[in-house]
Image 1 (cartoon, rainbow, N blue to C red):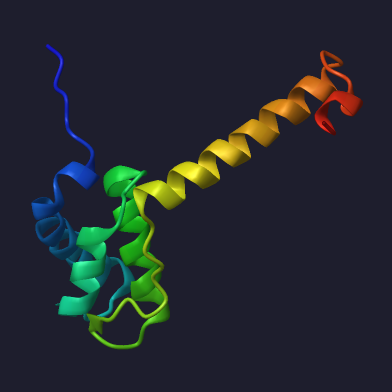
Image 2 (image 1 turned 180 degrees about the vertical axis):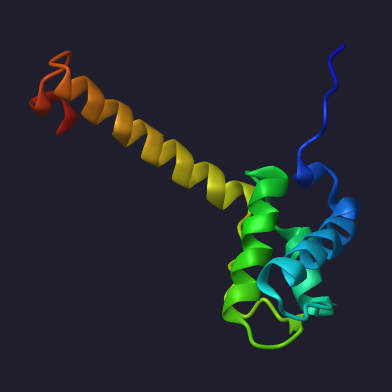
Length: 115
């Protein structure tokens, strides 16, 4: 049996539930009262393009819980990423990595890359 779970970016309605669940776990882990997130932060979380799915969301919430002092997280250091900005960065980075790997392997000459 194969179970396919759509990416978090296609299940935005699940984000509130997931955030509350993550906060409950982190409250115990860090022995810190974490009671929620601001409405603005939740809106940003729902608008974000989640490439890493639930684990990425958990990392964001964990980071905010560590850097913020209040029980209600504001997301003051959270940077929104969009599908288009993520895609451009990844394609450019991957292209450069592949080029360098080909040069390192001796499969293409450095001079070819300069054109």
